Length: 184
Image (cartoon, rainbow, N blue to C red):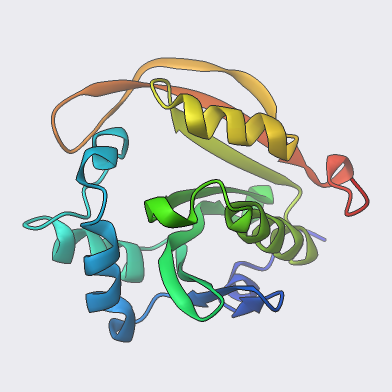
């Protein structure tokens, strides 16, 4: 295959408990409310999804080139978002990111279910490399990447200026198609 199928990424993904729906206008207000639950967590994100930034960030997530962002549901309730970003179909690589879960959904195993759905779908769509880029200060997300089986590739120092002016170090993890096994 010359390159991966980026168009195939825009599909609803569901395992019976976890459901991912491509972000639409219909998700706007529920996601706004969910993002406001944990205001402090946004200091680790490149973009803020808090008012007054929410609408601009929502539009960029929903309509931005090179990304497919999903509203994330657990047992029918919106619990956050996640998605494919920095999609490079020609290189058969993409990043899974822009993941936010309400505090009540953290540590329940649903994030793992979301990641399994995303990884399975990315590899089935012809991608061979999936990256995760995490703020160097975010120990919880780094631990989740390790638990997922991602390989830590290194740290990009002073890599990304985020919405509040802080310039973060970015820790890069990846999973390759031949490393991903459903029987883990």
